[in-house]
Image (spheres, rainbow, N blue to C red):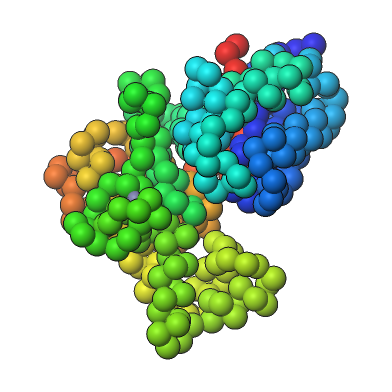
Length: 319
Ligand SMILES: [Zn+2]
């Protein structure tokens, strides 16, 4: 059997799996919704099922894979395979031996990494970042995550590097889902944007955001709902996206001042949806804060799309 690997992107709403060859070519893929009740063991079972489906599509058994990589939210320990505090997953406030559990159910080695970092490394090796030696990934979604590659190597710090969403853009500013104030994510994260839209709507601001949400059978303001509202010129939606871009420009420019990467790659649910449309606005916000303003980094949108997180996770498996 050729050198095939599995990759799993564990998200708050979906579990995306792939089986790829050694060049990162996708031979099988499957997606399942993330369980919304139960606990980590139920999530692990759904992950096993989804990987099995991708393997079947690729014509292999999971045990024949040279390994499976997982991009996980929360505090994912690459050495032990333990994931702790994945609060957007059901009953996952504590820690759970995800790597060990999956290794048993899949019959092959499992490596765990941070979801955003592995997606950024996927772009670095196979996508928008492959021409560069250093890059900053900004994953604009429910939260705002980041990943860093410096001199061709991932920079993980002591394990918690890349939390660009919690760079402070306004001292004493808006409340962030992390509990602190003024973080970039408090303005640009989808969850924080939804909370602010709801607050303004409750105070009488006119918006179709929540009408569209109900009409399309969603229980939250997905990137697709934001996109529909923007297309029909919804003023509240526009002002909140503008506010998000302002915060992103401020935070990303500050990070660029520190790291001086060759490129910035924008991904994530909102990044995929809005990155192109707002790229010029983002560049212009950034330019106000860049210390070296005549040579900004190259700005790109993530290229690997929906499967990028899972493909990036597969790279955790050593060749
Ligand atoms: Zn925060």
